[in-house]
Image (cartoon, rainbow, N blue to C red):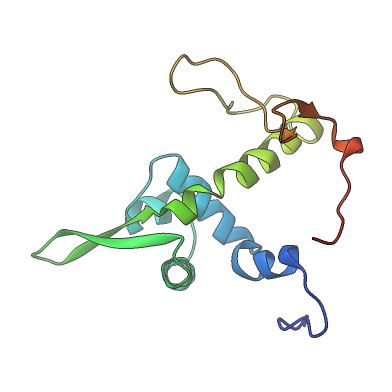
Length: 143
């Protein structure tokens, strides 16, 4: 099994994958972006084992991606809401969806659009000047 300490490495991708790189975790986050908040909603949508869902939701709460908010007192029930840190994953999830639509799905099941006027949007690299940058024209260099 791959270790999780990455000794001698400073890699944000590796650290991020330790938190959200497991399949169920990303699908739970996807479902949260689709409006699901309650344990039963996630469980029904994903068909995930309850113990696995409990573990993943706990991890996402512990790392500040979700907050656990009580919505009912008797019996006590909670829902899971994305935090600002969680909402920041929208770009990464959108990029994965866009790549899958372009390379794997014959007919994309969903689309990304602007909420204010419903125009389609794409995930893209943008320079600090606001101009789009082609993916082949981007390099990863030390900070």
